[in-house]
Image (tube, rainbow, N blue to C red; front, side, top):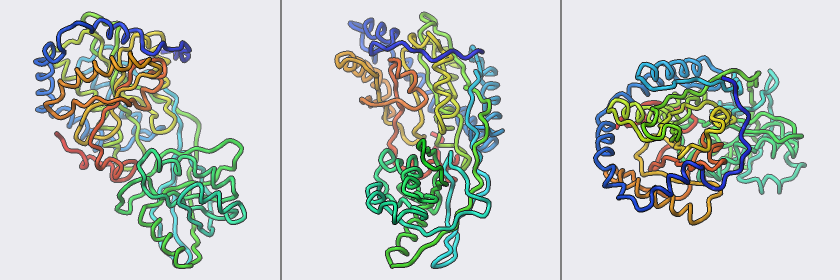
Length: 443
């Protein structure tokens, strides 16, 4: 299918379909009264179903991690589309998405002074490699960008910078991973390392995407385990000169073809209006991509399949999507918006699950550009829907939600819902070899 250009219309705050639905919802009977029995039936089916678990087991154990450009991602796309067709979902499609092709290659790190010992590391996605012989340099450690700037170019030039930033939540701590390379290179560093972005480590480094600032030299950037960062810090604090050898053969090849996977149940009354939900099929090249985000895409997929099996045909079209390239550039979400074309204005809601499979508590809702009264009415409507999930403790509806894959839709006024969990351990496994199926409770 030919890809359309991105839409340029400016939303009035709400998608047209959602605005209409919200106005029609006034003076209607309680949602819990109208939908209680049907919701209970669907929830009951989900709690006794093992089809979703079997799919996730296959995705993790038989296909494995699924980085952009890998044969495994292509296999996952083909498998999901085939299963959707076998299950009777309608309009199953795999529209083309061009994705980056970063290849990790062989990599290693080791201390060479004041002792020789391996360092547990993972190169960060998008990083350049080192020369074949590697880079050996003196390590300096900082806990923040402010500390780095205070050192100045004279003390940073020719060094390897270690960002030994303590965990302060993902949103704050991840900045050293995403932009640390250029900040260090601007002052003359030859490479940079980041303490893994995680609250807890068993000496397992955590990878993730990084970027380079235009006009600044591209230098190698890697994550080291929390334990290795702490050891280097202790050596430095004790007055030792610390030198490290870093070898990375990472490279970025030409973009390659991948695809979003789309299936749906057409609506019985308003098939032109769409509720889209999903997660992302791609993952990093470590672990199995179980929590991030195999569980999300499978849970959304299986929810739609259960509706089909129960012959619960929705009023509006319910569409499930397995997006690609969430981890690198977000090309899958952008491509879906372009593929949907003018139909974006008929999207009533976009729901994303990309926070792992811990115990669910509810959803966060965001509507970009909505006036306060409209946003409040929408949240009130969402809270009424949430009551249908109170029986499993997942009925909490709050302001603020969405996700990377639905962000292009949300930018055009589509209400975005982000699935939320207790979030106790997700970042212990995130982007690491520990992101495996055994971390997920089948229930």
